[in-house]
Image (tube, rainbow, N blue to C red; front, top):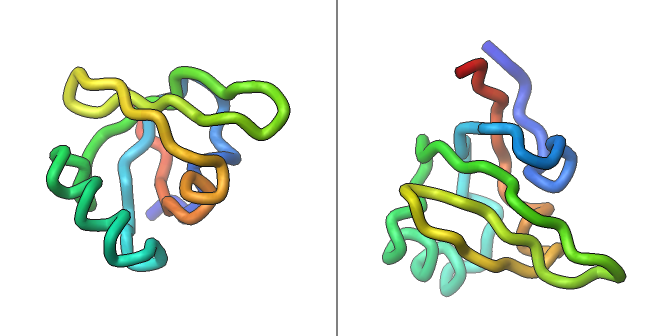
Length: 81
């Protein structure tokens, strides 16, 4: 099985599977799950803003902007699709 890495360390545009939300703050975990972003979801890193700005991910056809410190906490595994 592939090793878990931070979503922030994945290349732009690569598709990954969300492995764990356990390290997130409970309120952020709830917001993400309310939007359909659960463990096992396929997500893609769409845009990294300059100077520490928000990061845009795509999941289930919707775009979501997150802070970089939140994205660092998302554990993912690469997919080869």
